[in-house]
Image 1 (cartoon, helix red, strand yellow):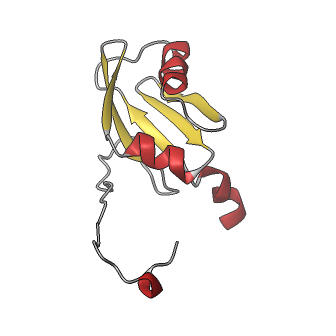
Image 2 (spheres, helix red, strand yellow; image 1 turned 90 degrees about the vertical axis):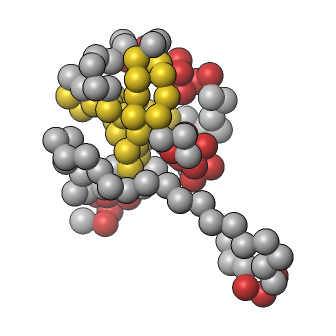
Amino acid sequence: MCSLVAPFKFALVEKFPAHHPPLDYIRNFFLNLKLIGEFFVTLLNPKNILTILRNDLNYCQVFSHCSHFVSNCYMKLFKWSPHFDVNVESHVIPIWVSFPYLRLYLFSP
């Protein structure tokens, strides 16, 4: 099972409450973010788009905002997981914690 889920490690689901713009507009939105490496954008259903990013830097850059406007369409971001249900609002949100003056031996990348 882990090997099946691994390609989706940095996957996000974009929900469009009303309607979504064409996929090319969404791809151009991600291109304009100047992401490092490639990404994959596809349609899950009429209101949801799946985006697979290739690294954690891009993932943090995109997911840190939680919502965007693409061609005047509101887009809300959700973390994908194997248990993700498009009909249920996800409760997973990004949280960044800062530890100023953290001693070097306590740091682990």
